[in-house]
Length: 343
Image 1 (cartoon, one colour):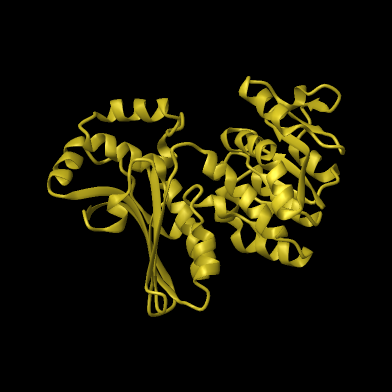
Image 2 (cartoon, one colour):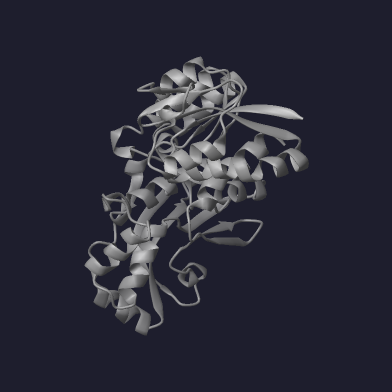
């Protein structure tokens, strides 16, 4: 039995559910993989907790569900203790970085957390897309210098193993086109508009379902889809894509009447992210709402589904989708990444 000492930074929707997974799946992971996943440290926006003997992940999850902070844990919690200090001081093998994306703030503090963990010789798994968008090659170079691994399968399309499919299962191929619907929020709202709801009603429903953030612009203006496309192009196509290279259009200019009319014609609007390899070796990237014909694979996605299509030279066209009614699959990507590192 190998014991893996984990740090978890970020205890929101994904971090809290990951704690639930550690509690629920721990015995199975030990039996099937010979790994004991020991949560020794955790941090949220109000402080941190550290116990070399291990924190109880079920207790951490319950505390967060009740609106508390991990810093409130008796004997081991420290209010106001920054996550960076926890990472710098803790005895751990791996960091799970699940803090908020904050792409517009330079992907901080997640980017600094990942840099620090890599420099300390820790493996890193993260569903936080911000650091990968802004510093993809730098972070991979840091990991290579330290002989550790950086895994980020949860950064694109929730629990769908889009990165793994593209990097591992398409080895030997040239991916000449990517088509993806990687953002759940816009798909959900577009479907509600096509059902006849107003924009206000659709956004209210999306917020009630936990699909739409308080500031909806990151999703609705196409930034989230563009960020995920940048990661796919870097990770799968091997091209140094940047966010500013994406031709981006969100969905806010569309009307409910547009959605209803398209559906009546057998077409379905999706916020489509595409990347095309050009003859000179560069890649053209675009995010825009597109009325797809009904027989298109991505047109058939439901309101809480995401999908990707890889067009290749030797494997044909590979298509994959996920139905993600809750954030649990996204949280579970951290477990998948850990198991891929160690087993």
